[in-house]
Image (cartoon, rainbow, N blue to C red):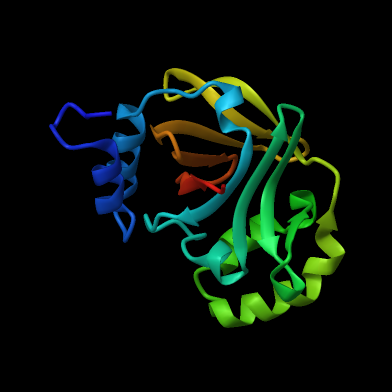
Amino acid sequence: MTSSDGGTSAARLAALEPGTTTVAALALFDALPPLDVDETLGRWAGRGIPTAHPFDGLLEALGWYGKRMDAPDDVHPLVFRGARGRLVAITPTLLPLGPALRLAPVVPPAVAARAFAVLRPLLTTTRPQARLRTVAYRGVPSAAMVYDRLPIIDAFRRVDDRTVLGVMDLRGSALPYVFVLRRDR
């Protein structure tokens, strides 16, 4: 796909991945085409895009792998590397998101990672924690992940056949968390 400024969407994303502003990340998001729900099925490796959001770098420090979308009603929004590198899904409803938003900027990532490593076995689940639906976000209907018991929607747009740009819309957060997903083969 070629964007209106003459560069490819993948090249624009690559330029933003080391760090950018929320405005620039959302400008790329808005320029990308929507996805159908079926196009999001599979296992995806994820990485945050630094935009000065309190969660910047936090998920990676905790061992975040990405997301697993087995079927429209069978979705695991938070997949982490567990013991011996094994991938495990966790229950996001047990995470203290409010305190995490406040504390993430002041707690050293190494401290958060050690605490999470202790808690991760208690948070692990095999039950789906979200669903995929078509949702209009920023005026465009596209595939989105709707968390079952949290006020979170992850909206997706297509960068290319293997790459998706995501925006986590969390009630109570003034800024969206921006991330990229790459299909795991």
